[in-house]
Length: 242
Image (cartoon, rainbow, N blue to C red):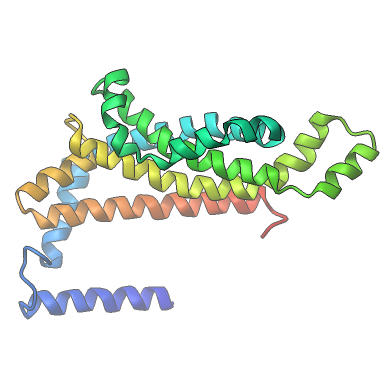
């Protein structure tokens, strides 16, 4: 109820500011203009939304399939992790936007480069979270399992991986946001004909603030829905945590 009330108050404040001309329409357009732009975006430009979603999902899933198994492997083999940890720290400290030229050289200007950049951004977040999850598993549980003559596979699947799941889900929630961010930035500055990032860039050049706000609204809704779905999945999988 409080969330609905806060939203209603925010919308009323928006209507008041535009009705009294307290803010220039370039900075805060009327609500009906934004709704009209949102209607046009969803009906006539649905391909932009689907293109951005498709690239984001593909990049995020690629990051998950690479980073999670690699993170578990490095977390279990601590000696190997200590050897390569500085490589990981170095690469994850470099903004993916600074590596745009390299991705373009290797993957071109098509969807492959955007998906690869999205996977890179989300993958390192998942990798670090997975490694930390594996390394934080309780030693006494593993020792007890070894005393009971459990195999390495059993310890990994029954103890290590389940205790790592909360870290993985945290990484997934952050990773989806970064995947979307990178895709939007790539669509703005790397050649593409469809995508929300391209629509935001074109609208900003024309000072079409209603379209910019409409695109931002879509992006925010995608983030909210994604986080909600991941939270529901986490509650069903990591049922002992919640």
